[in-house]
Every structure is written in structure tokens, then in C-alpha cells.
Image (cartoon, rainbow, N blue to C red):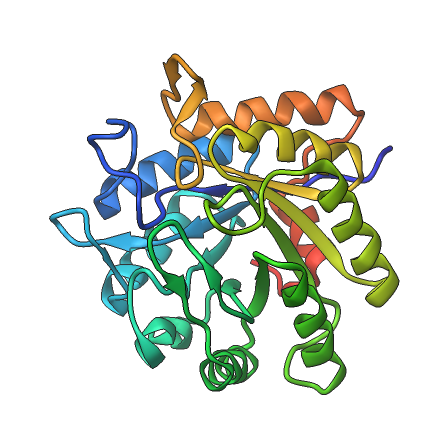
Amino acid sequence: MSNPCIICVAITGSVPRKEDNPAVPVTIAEQVESTQAAYEAGASIAHCHVRNDDQTPTSDPDKFAALKEGIEKHCPGMIVQLSTGGRSGAGQARGGMLPLRPDMASLSVGSNNFPTRVYENPPELVDWLASEMLKYDVKPEIEAFDLSHIFQAVKMSADGRLKKPLYIQFVMGVMNAMPVDKEVFDFYVHTLKRLAPDAQWCGAGVGAGQILVNEWSIAAGGHTRTGLEDNVRLDRNTLAPSNAALVERAATLCAKYDRPVATPAQAREILGLRSA
């Protein structure tokens, strides 16, 4: 294969803490520094969350603005993708950063179970977030935790609530949601190609499943996500020293399958994003 592979780095998330791995970046300055190293290692998308001083998650638009500004300054052309996830806020507060007009934002189009709670994405909130993304020209990354989320995203694109072409991320390995399973992964890819042939897709694995989903995605011609949000280890006995180390590992798999690592400019072209 010769098609470039987009590597997304999920730098912080809402759950991992310094106690889990001291390399988890929490402050804005730490996140910008960690993102710059990951960018230099080959990541072209930064998937971003923000935290309070006590490491708890927040949807504070001012913090998102500072992080976006820092990444744009130190990582020229990198795609900034802000999270509208439900761990860091409730209701429309989850989309309070969309007026910042990031390149992309995550969008979950349905509910599912998480390790200790229900991840609620009621239809009216999903529709509001989608409409805000249309309003501010923000491309959604659909986070599919379940097969039904793929069908819902295709339905939303057909009726105009989401712009075409879709970009869908298969999320596998969250406890109580879809496990890391190769046959399920293959069915996801087949189903998306059948329902939305023009869609681009990405695979993200959580915990020990990260490296498996990285390899499956790269080998199948898709894109992939890595980073300390999803996994804080290189292996059972070794903490990942940085986000960059996880990006480097994904880039090595790209070389194994003769997939060039996409530059930020190539990633923007592939995803149909505006120029930096």
C-alpha cells in the first residue's frame, strides 16, 4: 500500500493521572510540550482534553483556547481536534469550545456503557453538537463505540446533519463496551465501506489493545490513534515514557506495511479540511 496513514495522538484524556504514569501531561504547558514531541514523531492530529489543576477533567473553553493556541504555535499545520466527551462536562457545556473553530471535534452519536457508568449521548444533545459543528465549520470525528453508532452516523450524513465524507473512529477495548476483537474490527471496516464508500476511518484501541488495533488499522489501509489517553504502557512491565514514544511505535508499524506517515498537509487533504 502507498496511501499515507494519519496518526492521531490522544495526549491526555479525562482519566489517566500522574499517579498512573508521570508522563501524562496535565497543564497546558505540559500538553503543548508533549504534543510538539508527538508531532515531530509523526502525529498529524492532536486529540485534546483539558484538566483542572487537581487533574479532574473540564470543558472550560478558556483552557481549550490556550491549548489550541499553543499547539498551533509550536506544531505548524497540525490538526487540532477538541473533545466534546461526556466525562468532562454535561449537556451543552460539552460543546462550549466549538466557537473556537478547531479543525475537528469528537462526536459520539449514541450511548453505551463505560467501566463504571453509562456514557449518555441523548439524541437531542447529539443533534445540537452536530449542528454547532456545521455552524462553525468543524469536522466531526465520529467515535463509534458500538456497531449502531456507524449506522447512526451514516443516517445523519444522509439527512444533512453531518457533512460528507464521514470520518469514523472505531473505539475498541473500553471496559463494558466493544472489546478488541479482530472479527468485529473486520466487520466494522466492511460495514462502513458498504454503507459509506467515501468515508475515511481510524482505529483506536484502549489499554493493551492499543498496539493490536494500531496494527490492524494500518494493515487494512485505515488511519490510527495512539497516545497516553488510551494507554499508559509500552508493555505489561514498562510505562510509556511519552506520547511521542507511542507515536513512534505506530510509525514503525506504518513502515512495516509500506504506509508513509501522513504529513499534516496530507492529512488535511485526505480529510477535506481547510488549510492551516
